[in-house]
Image 1 (cartoon, one colour):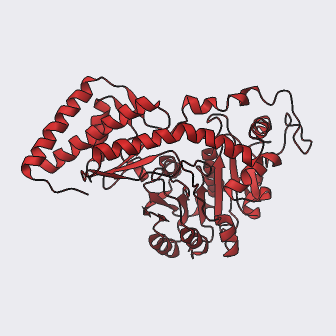
Image 2 (cartoon, one colour):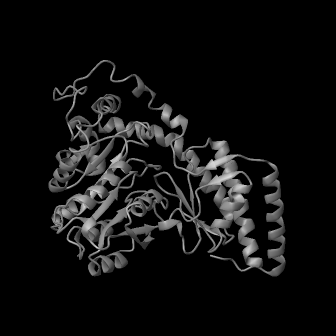
Image 3 (spheres, rainbow, N blue to C red):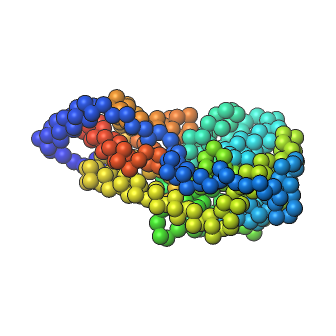
Length: 422
């Protein structure tokens, strides 16, 4: 990554970076890029939800949504999301407001009850491990750490996890019970899985008969271009390969409507769906069907959901464009950093020189710019290269975002040139 510089050029660039950083610190900024939250303007797009269902309390099949029951969720809401999540309506559950909660519950249930195809509960086994593509999503890693599940890093490629590594590991080690996947516009790299990656995940041999792919399709509808990325149907591919029970599909409306009061989805094989329903029946008599009906009325159908996401895109795309423009203007050609311009999702992964990410984040914090901690993109918060920084452009206003990214590039230049001069 590093560009060779003469001693004189490096001295000049370092002095300029130091002056720019001093100027940055004197501005006494207070900017926050830590989490990928929807902005208030994005949330405003769903304000009509707050007045729904407007006295209506009957679902399409006659269900009184005010009462108990309906663990699988409203069929008409599942119909809206079945296509984008690539799960047949009959195999899709609509639950509470958080897909992370569903992932948590699936791990707990797998620990405490026998999965379809399993020989015993996970908790009864000596060791459990998950493959973790990196850079990846810190909350996935936090779940594993919470339950004492070993995490094994797998490098990401432009097509998804390195399948040569994945296939070798899962074939050798029966303790490897799963892999975390964000298959479309991944967090934070913006990678979308290729058809070959999907096919190999579906058909690979695993030493564990109860191996599961946690398919967190969080950004299934979150496009940023006129050419939405489409990925292959993993659930169908697994069934065709004779591994129907291999995949758990997760999704939600958290970044579609309102983050705190959305609807989460789980999809899988009929056997896995019945397994989850059976276990969930012990902890709940049914989800919030009033909120589900509210979403049905608001979104109307799959076309209505796509139209709503175009309004979301109109707010998000200028922010991602600004990030790409500023990074290219300030860091392009320097050899100090690389990045990708994602076609969707919520994040930008900035890769700085090895050994520099923590120091960049520290300098940014001292200048009033809060970033996600360096290392959050890796299990246990440990990026062995100390190179990845996750940028979350969604929440700040455009002008505030531009100031934050400009300040971040100052810190990248300062730390990078200091490292080269040391």
